[in-house]
Image 1 (cartoon, one colour):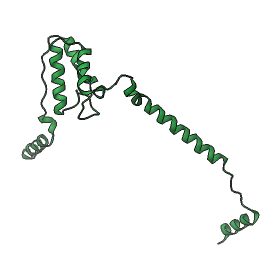
Image 2 (cartoon, rainbow, N blue to C red):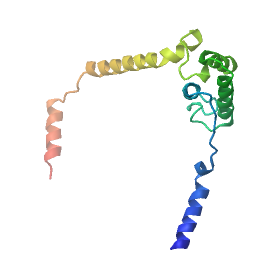
Image 3 (tube, rainbow, N blue to C red):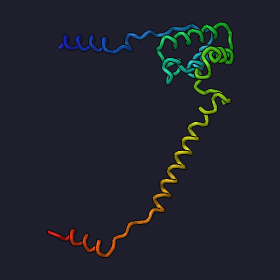
Image 4 (cartoon, rainbow, N blue to C red):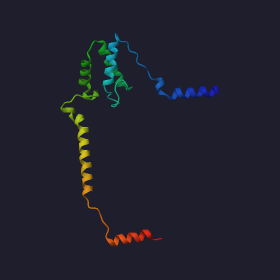
Length: 152
């Protein structure tokens, strides 16, 4: 029984890559700096993963961007300076909430436009079906159907 537990434990350790993940240990001068760092890496998008923020991603680029954010905070840069640096280098895509401007207007209005188009198509289809004449059976067809239903 003891051997089985040891083997099971060994297999679990080998199969779980999160056990081997490195943990970043960063030293901040104040709690405020650490709060700012955490806030920034939550708001900035990983450019490799595209659906994760820097805090959640283990991609090499995300690690580099976290390190750069840490260095800029330690150097005394403001949040705006750090965000501006990231946007200048990587574009608006690095932001989870890009600003509303001409180049990002489709990102902001696109879902609403698609929703309105979908509703318009749905309304048209419902109206078309409503306006179609209902097929009625002639007396002869009705009698034929009754005979078919009552046959043994």
